[in-house]
Picture 1 (spheres, rainbow, N blue to C red):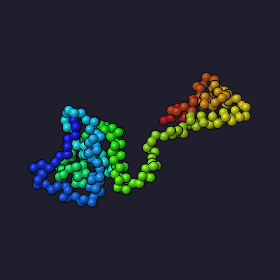
Picture 2: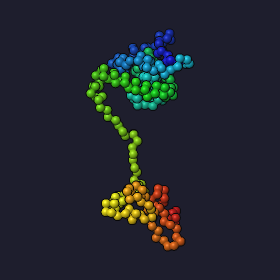
Picture 3: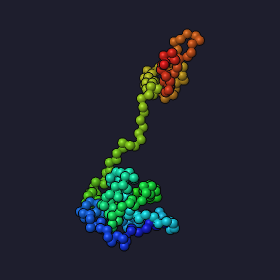
Picture 4: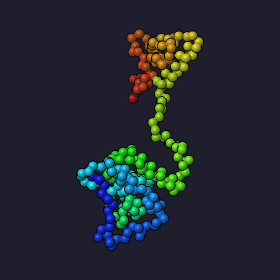
Length: 234
């Protein structure tokens, strides 16, 4: 169901101090809360809810928690623990009086981010950019070029395994052999090698130095093959 409106002061809240009378109006979160267009999130995220069912949590609360989570880099559980202790966080999320209990369960934040999806998170980011441009905190020229940290992005890293190093060395030998007119099959007569490319040339099996009837030598180039002889183990 559509999110319920923010909770207003009740009769039992008349004896409580309003957060507006406690907090410093010059605090950065108080000033930021006045600049954010909270009603725009209600219009943008209203289509993610059904018309029947239990009323959802206020949009300002959930959006404010998302902003606080990413700003202070805390987990969902730690976010709600600090929220109960911080009057500025409660004011930022739209509450008028001090709350002694968390406003929701940590799992509600997970479900909310899944509900709005990447499109909704981009809306949150776009609002912060708009506020920065309106207040002059960010110049338009600063948004023309974006620097992305690729530290955590997957990279094509080839670990220097023995088999891979052998194969790279054979590829170099094949190229040198082609330049001098030597057939690549001379480098590895026990395998079929393509004269046009060294990619088909795989590391050769180790040459057996034992006599007739001895077990063949092991291919040490394959991963997982131990270099120790059975009698040398243990």
